[in-house]
Length: 364
Ligand SMILES: Cc1cc2nc3c(=O)[nH]c(=O)nc-3n(C[C@H](O)[C@H](O)[C@H](O)COP(=O)(O)OP(=O)(O)OC[C@H]3O[C@@H](n4cnc5c(N)ncnc54)[C@H](O)[C@@H]3O)c2cc1C
Image (cartoon, rainbow, N blue to C red; front, top):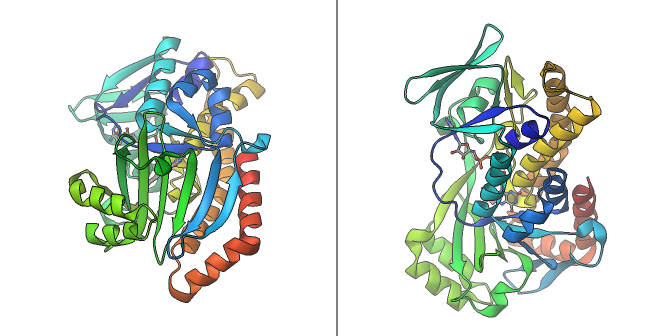
């Protein structure tokens, strides 16, 4: 968002604690990639991205290939990429630095409010900053979302599923795991996704019930055709497996309260099942820029009009994506006879429905 504002000639300060090195990756679908291009980053993004040529859905129980979506034969499915999280972060940071309109403040925000038509921000060193606006991009558990939504603290939010995340060096992986495909393996009550990244690693995510343990993860991966490798690897690197609760967030009616406006996961967290969260955050920024251009904004204009329109547009646009991501999660989580029925449906008409749904989402 800072980059989008800078490209409109508006200066901003990013307040963020010193970031740890980010591990793993995200899939960036054609709609997310289009946003990167609109932000002028399409060319540089290629350094951190790997174009994937196929998406497939497979059954963990039988090994059957249920759905295959070629990603290189139609323009609206291209480019479908994976990107390292650190690469995406570095790309955005470098571009923002280059504008000379963005400064950084190394701090965490501990308090947010609106006062006298300004945002008032308290930092962890006790300092209080007053700003024309605060754009809260501090994630689904951030203090800005809590302020705008008057939401319960994260500890009170419920979750029934967790994602186990793991990155494996391609040097030790069987080559078949490093093929340029996004693989979704459907199991009984759980699913697993893996795809290679541009830094030569494999990104693996397993979504399982809240109570699942590493032993359950090992049990799940044993069903994979490369189960012998995966189970041994996870057993030896259990301390590198990161478990992330998948909270069930309410969707917000408004992204703005006073002079605080939300973006990214802070505004519209969604389950990861359609691989859209980060892409939608990029679309937030691209849409801000496009809207400012269409409104013919100049840096001295009151941003209220722009922000109000932007928030309403984005809220409307993400609602159905979020609903579809929730639906996909519920389908992936089926078990027993329903899982068998799901797999049968996927292998027959479901594949076409899924392909059509993804194509129209990616074309937006
Ligand atoms: C298992 C899993 C797999 C996923 N896979 C994909 C995928 O394939 N494709 C995709 O597009 N999306 C994916 N996502 C979603 C994606 O990770 C998120 O949508 C994306 O990270 C949101 O970015 P964000 O910048 O809005 O929030 P975040 O990534 O949460 O970043 C928030 C930032 O705010 C900072 N912050 C927090 N609190 C404060 C504070 N008080 N003061 C200052 N700074 C603060 C944090 O340090 C952090 O840097 C996945 C998510 C999960 C859980």
